[in-house]
Image (tube, rainbow, N blue to C red; front, side, top):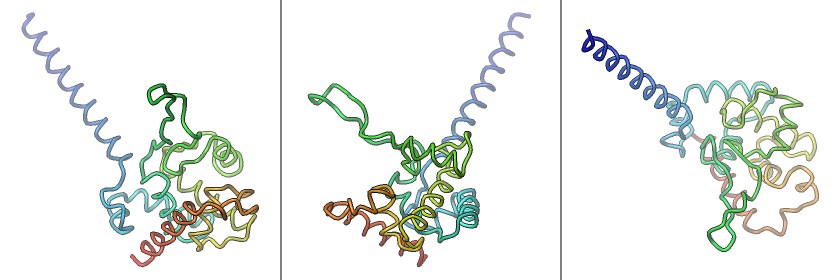
Length: 196
């Protein structure tokens, strides 16, 4: 009798462990970055749900899919829980991150709250691709409305995204050669994605 109970408990425990491991693997595969991030066709072939979410956001806000995807790649490399690096005092004492940026879109707390209030919902998450891509299209739409930047202009959309609408309007990027180089990189990636 005891052996039968022990065998059943062991079998149930192994089954539970297997189900748990499978669930973790499934969740990780959903949140994992695409294997071939340099080709938009490969990204959408691998991540079919991303394709549907991107097309839905494009329909909602207008604009091309290649611009926000190039910006997202630059910001997070398509890593769902990306954060700015930790800062260290004396090389070994952590004292926080450079900003509150988080998730696929590297959206900061305040900007994300604006999105939730204006276009998303209180349930929108920065580490959810559907919400992050909708956020990026929303932000591009505001960049066009506030600063007159075309949704097809990846370079200036990225500069708006990085500097904020007010910073872009003031020209805060003009003395940042490194940022202008990054914006040019985003523009090249956007054009590559568009051609694919």
